[in-house]
Image (tube, rainbow over all chains, first blue to last red; front, side, top):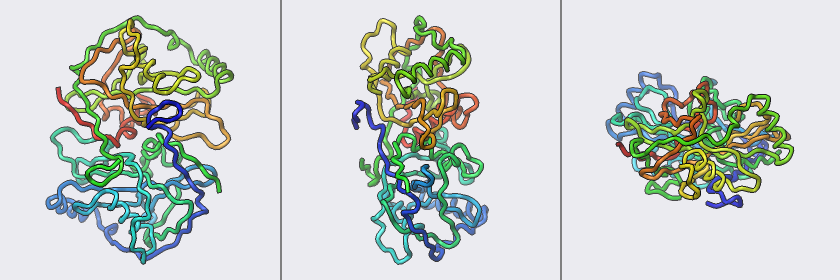
Length: 208
Length: 208
C-alpha cells in the first residue's frame, strides 16, 4: 500500500468518534461461565482441548473519543477484571464470523439477529498460551510445546453512532490509551499492549 | 486481505532464516553523533526543530532464527544502550528511501552505493515524543501539544543469506523476543514493545 510519502502501509487512518454519539443500555446476562472458579475453568479448558484442539479466541478493539483522547471500550466483569468484547470460536467458525457473533452477544440488543453490522478490520496481534493456567505472550511458545490457546485481536471500526446493550453483570467502560499503556497489573498483558498493537494507525480523533 | 479462514489481514507470514546464514563484518565508524552528551544533543534537536519541524526517525526490525526462536537484530553502542538500525529522515525524503539509506549506512559494506537491496515492509508502529528529552509513547501526545519527534518502525524482510558490515563503535546482537518483551529497563520502551508490534505476523521459523 503506497502513501503520498512513498511509504508502505503506514499511516492507515482510523476515524474515532465521540463517546457521546453512542447510547449505552443493558440487557439480561446470557452466559454464567464467568462464575466458574479457577479449578472448574481449567477442567473445562482441558476437556475442550481433548475434543477440539487449541482454543482460538477472537477479541475486538473498539475506539471512542473522550476529552480529545482515544479510549478503548472494555468490559468489566463484576467490578473486578477487565476484558475485551469477544470470546471463543466454535469449531470450524471463521474468525470474522465468530467475532461478529461474540460482539453481538456482548454488545447488541438481545432481539438482534443479524451479526453482520460490525466492521471487523485488521488483525492487530496474536497472543499465545503454552498451558491452561499461564499468561499469554505475544509470540509462540518454544518449538515442540503445543500452544493451548491463541487470542487474536482485531480492530473494529465503529460507525459514527450506534446503540450498545451490555449484559447486566458487566459494565462497558471507556479507558484512555495512556491509562492502559504498560499497565499490565490492572489490565493484564493483552489489553495493556493495545497501544503498541494499534500504534501503526493514524487515529483521526473527532471531538464531541 | 482474505485468508483461508475467511479472516482479514491476519496470519501474514514472515520467513525467518537462521543466524548462521549471515556473515558479520565490521567497518569504520561514520558518524560521531553518538558521542554527544545530553546537553549538546538537546541543543542540536532544538536547533533542527526550529528549521525543519518535527523530527521523523525510521527504524528497521530485522528477524533471524537462533536455537529455534525468533531474534531481533539490535545495535549496541559502546557496550551501553541498544538501538534499532535506522535514523533521522532528511527533509523531503520518503520513509522507505530514508530507511534504506540508514540500513545501508549501518549494515552494508562501506563501498556499497546502492541502497535498494533492502526489503522494507509494513509499518508496524509509530511512537511519539512530546518534548526533546522525554521517552516516546505509542500514541500522540494530548491535543494542542505539538510532538517533537515521531519514530516509525518497519518490518524489514531479510533474504536467505547476506553480509552485514557494522561500524566499529557498535555491535550487532541477535536478541530473543522473550528477552526484550516487557523489558523496558534494558531496551527502552520502543524495542521492548516489538513483540506486541509484530504479534500479528505468523513467523515461519526456518531452523539452521
